Image 1 (tube, rainbow, N blue to C red):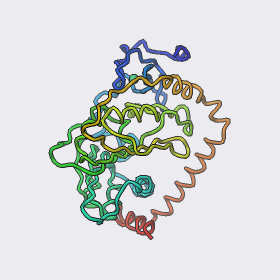
Image 2: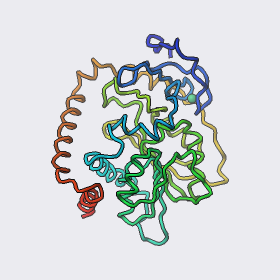
Image 3: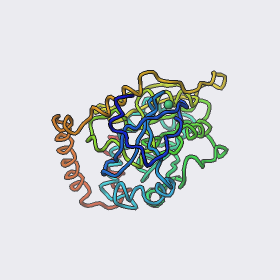
Length: 336
Ligand SMILES: [Zn+2]
């Protein structure tokens, strides 16, 4: 980890705590700024390669409950373009997990819990397809919108506070949620108890090795943890799951993983050191410099795609009659 010494700027902060995954001490600074240029210390565990924001965001729960969507999207409830975009993302997420889902109505309810349900677009899609689905979302503005607009079964709150005795689910989905949790290990323990014995967990997180975005955009105060394939896999294995499938998105930006609960008699496993993983991640992050990035076609293709998307969204939502009507149109076209 000697290669990281040149960017260390640790003086204002106490030494990083031990790694929440493998328990190793001696985390090393891998980033000193967030995507807006504000000071933000990001560290990497030398034992396993887990990356986290240190110190973590103060009052993280208040932030996610009240301000997160405002900070991210500039709004307290989704606007038409957000609903459209999230509806399109919901369709791609359904396609990603479809191989693991039995057909709805095929005998017995397939119960699904979507944690971090946002504006409810994904659970509304599953509901439309005939699944028994429930959502959990900490952000009040988005959760209240989803309940009001779609009439969904959605609780406002954090997974850490979920009551495992209230029932179990065959599927739990975590789309871009794990990186926001204060303690992913504890949260996965709670999710394990929310799944029935045959339960399947679907996870997608940003890939810390991604180079599709600007180097300045790698670290962000709302991301409390960062994973690569190896640390995500280790986290799931140490939380009592068996891996069914894992893949990296085409642009390298996201990691998808499906896992089933291990049988009750399976030996429990503690997270172990992942040899060479911290060095691998550090090498990717430190090599992702603005000069190299802007000498590739990636930023220009990304800009062009975003511009096209923005213009397309303006056209698509020009007669926006409300989120439900918009999603009904989108989902019915996709189902044909
Ligand atoms: Zn570690």
